[in-house]
Length: 294
Image (cartoon, rainbow, N blue to C red; front, side, top):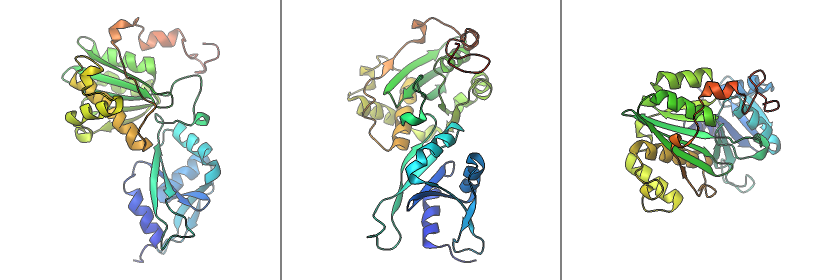
């Protein structure tokens, strides 16, 4: 079997860390996608699928977009529920010795978009993290484009219905849940039937509890998460910590615009379940899902 070219070796070395993500690989004035990513992008965006010599007998399927107009293509992919990793050239190709060094500088997902041209300015774009165990749930909603972050916890009777109502109230575009939360039938039903959110089930070791407190404190400049939310539960602490860690992982930044955490009680709000809000057409019409006419 022929050996891969140095550039394709570099591509695969980076791609192995982003298997569930479309990798936009910077080559000069274009972002190129290869193999399965190229096939997906070609089909979803109706772009020409070409090929490139990669050191193998068969050419690598390839699809590219100009870097100066990439935002529009990224926006369309994210709107379709894909995650996109942006891999940039980290040095000047004209002065590089050997293969140009490249690295992923950001991952764009439905719940972490910050570009105004990719957002609907009339509504928030929330990332949600839901952590559930022992009949107690913590739910965090963050809009990184505005810096808004809200946290609550739910327990007691009709817990699944209460969780669904909170999800329906914020309508996040992306949801992170732990495995126990993914087992809740009503939550699964809402995500599958009522929501278009990209949903990812995280392993329990994604963020240990001790690390969650540290992440919250580093984000909000406090010595303990209890300073922000008196009596905060482990579930709520994990929901907030996971939300911040995920945003840092994909944004590759310090999230300096998120400075306050709104810790609220769902009992402090008038209760309208998802079906009632939908029937009242509070934010969009039932027929066309448009804001106009709501």
